[in-house]
Length: 336
Image (cartoon, rainbow, N blue to C red):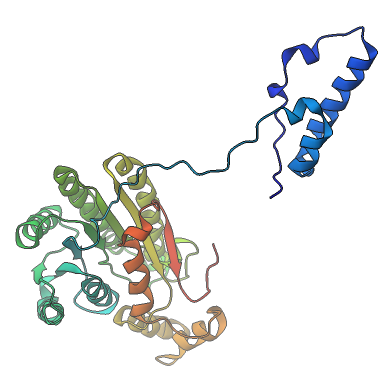
């Protein structure tokens, strides 16, 4: 196979650059230099045949070094556990069920108002032959998150994966936003992810076996939507914080990534559709249809399982060499 060699003139023997009174040798030197300077666009075979000087150089090996690979997830067959926040319904529920099918034992989490949904998801996971239990906690409260992580480790075993999925949305114009609106959005969507990342990372470090931190971003982490300004800002923050965590957690064999859903048929997007309709005069359901037809290349609204399939990959050993990334699952709205 032809190789293209980079321009590396410092590999030449030093004596070739010294002035010489021998015109034949001088000509040979100039030819050699010219050949090297042209090497960025000539096949390697041509270069090796061009000069005895170059022909004597050994070819650079293209063999990949056989590094020892260490996984952030246990070997196949080992017990794996995960916490999925905001998993009583919607995307969180789909993620919890998918990870259970992948062999994870799951801690189901949501706020106290959604406890019945948590219990139902836990029973559904148990019917699949996996362990599961529900733990109600508000992710914006660090102490409650710490209690949740401790309960999961006690009930299910060492924590392998944290899915910081919980989040809220609100449709409001920028000039209509109150300080409390902005604060609450960041308390849940940003502080909540931080609390989950930090507490789970501390647990994983204490276990000494690495792990995976996954967060919920959004397509608005790349391009904001009008009337979703503080929601968009919170998701930009999650994306940036994920990159920062990825850099600092790498030494502990902990990878950190986010998934970015688009327009998904969930209760959250039903609310967004309704509130945007109130602003624009559109009927309920028309806004999602409009966005689907005009924005989504694949021409359909996403379902939670579209997202959970990607999270399944991010929670598996197949993604062990990925960190600091935000993966978009939107059917072709945002191209990265």
